[in-house]
Length: 476
View 1 (tube, rainbow, N blue to C red):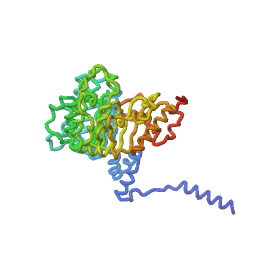
View 2: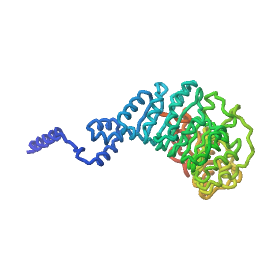
View 3: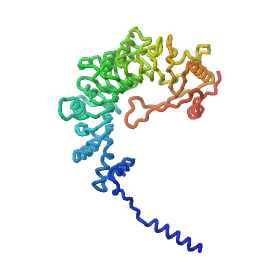
């Protein structure tokens, strides 16, 4: 009897294995089929689905063509041919990443035609082919390349009935100049700021100089909410004009040229960069144009001066410079700048300030520290500013530095500083950033820097990780 049952079970399993089960996908209404397709992560599977039948193809292609990655001219030709053959595919494209590969030929005319065709495009990242290898184009090929790339942007603000890029909300541009790592925001390129629905803009290695004022006819006409400038050469006048354009900026990442100036020999305007050091009042005047809306401010300034960039600093008012920024909640300083620290906390602080971050591209804690009673807070950024005024809203102060070994004395200093800040209602955080050979702007495929929180009101497990090498056995 037992043998008979075993045979029946085995035969049942074999029958089940040989049964062709068919899920009646096409019996479902289009809405449910589309919902199933939305949850398919594999592009390979989506391509197979689109080839099953015309009905499924029509439901699959809006998902399949929603995002596209273009690295060379061949991919540009394939995609352009596909969307021109089926205009519905062009309408389906919402996101484009175009990190041009310097090892392959780029078809810029095709890219321009693609941008003119994808009328529903919402996000665009464009990285020119030579930004990473430094072999910048000569004047003539550069002009041909940029004239093609800028054509859709110029058409977008023209008086034509049908205009491209009208729905673009997020734009990231990593460009270079002719025989130079730097390109210039001028009359020809200003069109990229004027797209009607542009919400977020990231620019790198751009010259923003005094001449920009010649090309601005009006203020407060740009819809931007978030602006990021990386490794840029900015003058006070250029910053003033640039920040006169947005109606209500909420996030400003003001990144000066900190790294490329050490890797390339191009002469930079001596009036550019080190804005808060050279003339804090002029810098505050420029940023104050967005005082009614700014919520997050990041200022990145060089750690060191170069001889050809040295400019005599102007003594000007700086204390309480951000006191009138009533919506400002998050402030980050990346680099050494006492004037910026004073503008944030000296005398009067922004009334709703919540988080302060100080980052430095080296080790922060000195090996030998003052043991006097006032020492713990005397070394803390922002709070060490003269006549610092800590608002009740401030909840977090964060320091980010490179990994270093911490002696017992340094550990005690950190804990003492944390106790002092806790009395003011501030939680102190200490983060270490791993060293990397990469530097901003971070391009396609490059790893972003990572940080590890080692102290947050107490020592975290990461602080005792022997692989980080944070602890020194030396006693003072």
